[in-house]
Length: 169
Image (cartoon, rainbow, N blue to C red; front, side):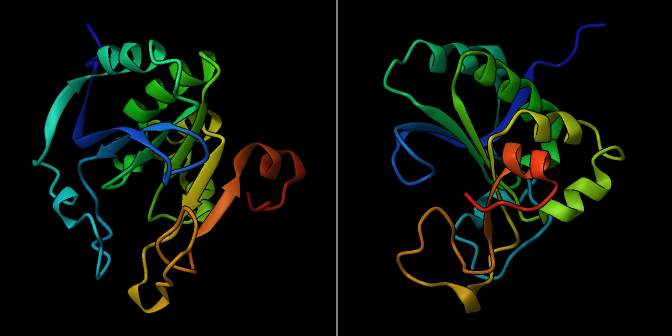
């Protein structure tokens, strides 16, 4: 049986400088359970919205662009399609690209549930940086770099895992 090689996205930003360091391709996942008040991307919450994209085609389009230093998974919440984003993340990592992923879940929640949800362990193992936590409009501060509210953390996954403590990027 052929594994489904599509991912549901609300959109793609071909080149971005504000979703991680360097020029990056940003993939916006379709589907989110968090429904954070004041979310700037609320149209991404509906799991039936957006459209299906062929993951291998998306990967190939990134690989042929020498300007890209990395990719960022945003949303919606990529963790709701973790198996699909894990597949893409591994391909990007194998190509030498830096991978960032945003989520409304906390890093601790992901660690506690990574063997209970499909693709969570694989996604965590193939990203460099996790921006975690729900957006909190009461903690929104203009000018925050790479996050929407001050409660969110930018976590260096590889070094946090090695040190067994949360190391912020």
